[in-house]
Image 1 (cartoon, rainbow, N blue to C red):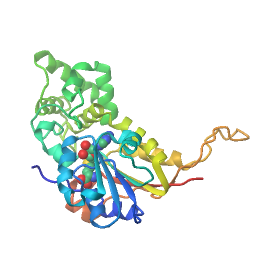
Image 2: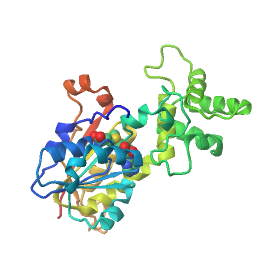
Image 3: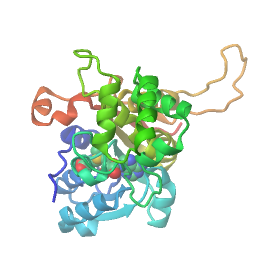
Image 4: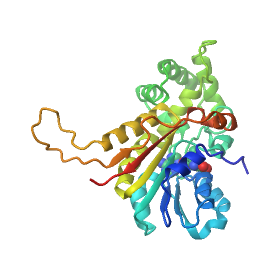
Length: 311
Ligand SMILES: C[S@@+](CC[C@H](N)C(=O)[O-])C[C@H]1O[C@@H](n2cnc3c(N)ncnc32)[C@H](O)[C@@H]1O
C-alpha cells in the first residue's frame, strides 16, 4: 500500500467546524480519511458523510475508519452531486462541510494513475477511473487552440503555444502515452535555464489534470449547492492549493456575503438576493512554520471558512 496522505491543516479544520453534539459533517474530499478520522477520534457523537470520486480512496478510507463504522457513511461520488448524495443517503441538516481540494498522496505517488511527471506511467490523470477521457486522450482530441487555452488558463503557463507546438511535432512521430514522454517534451520546449523555480512540466500537468477532471466546474457547483444544504451557523471549510481554486472560493464567499447586488443607481432592489454566508477568515489561513516543516505539500495551501446565515 502506498504512503498515507498527510492531512493539511488538521487542527485548523477541527477548530473551525463549530462542532456540537450530534453534528453531521460532510467530508466532500474524503481521500485517505485523515480529516474525518481526526473528527471522529476527538468527538463521540459527530457523524460524517464522506465522499470521494476515487473508488480506491473510498476503499482505503473504509479500512482506516473501520472502528468508527457506526458513525460514517462513505459514498463513491462527486462532491458536486452533494444534494443528490445527501438525499439518497437520507441525510439532511448539514452542520459542516470540508473540501480539501486537489489530489492525495496515494494518487500522486502511484505511477499507474499518471498524475506525476516524476513517475513514469500511463498519461491518465483520472481521479475517477470509471470516467472515459484520460489526459492522453485530450492530447489527441483537442484542437491546438483548445490545448493552448487549457495550458495557459489552467496551468497559468506563459509558454503554452510553444508547448503545444512541441506536442504536435512529437505526435507526428509517435503518440504520447506516458507521463515521462510528455514531461520530456514540455521540458525541452520551455528550456530556459535558471528561469524555472519549479519543474518545467508542473504547470502543464496541473492544467491537464484540471481539464481531465473538470475540477473548477465541480468546485463552483459544489459551493453553490452545499450552501443550500447547510443549517444556521454551519461552517464551510475549503482548503485550496493553487490560485485558480482559491480565487473561486474567495469570490464565492464574497458574493454570498452580499445582500442586494443591484447597480447602485437602482432606487430599490430588484434582484432579491439575500446574504447566505458570513466570512470567518477575511484573510486565508496559511500553514504554520511547524506544518511547513512536517508537510511540504502544505506550502501552497490556503484555508477559508464561511458560516451559513439565514437573514
Ligand atoms: C487532498 S485529498 C483529501 C485528503 C483528505 N482530506 C485526508 O485528510 O486524507 C483530495 C481528495 O479529493 C478527491 N476529490 C477531488 N475532487 C473531487 C470531487 N469533485 N468529488 C469528490 N472527490 C474529489 C480526490 O480524489 C482526493 O482523494
